[in-house]
Length: 113
Image (cartoon, rainbow, N blue to C red; front, side):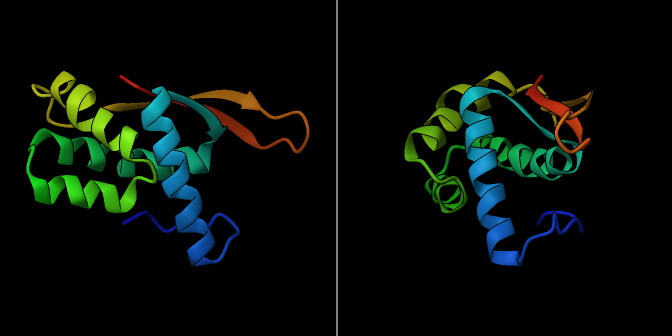
């Protein structure tokens, strides 16, 4: 479950946003977003990769329940999970890159290691 950051949204909107961002992040491998969103995305993405390490139907269905696109879930199980098979966690890296010009929000890049 995500941390305690509410991100200024009701629960249903917040979970929908996080699901979509995790899906896009796992698809592309890199994403630029605010620091607080990146800190929420990281553990969710790592959980999806950890599910992919044990290729069972139950884990695949659990991943599909969270990831919004089936092709991304397939990519997690076929490409990303074998890549991190020897690693026991810490699949993501968050790097702060400064403030956004429009609203001065602190921006970070989250990427797969």
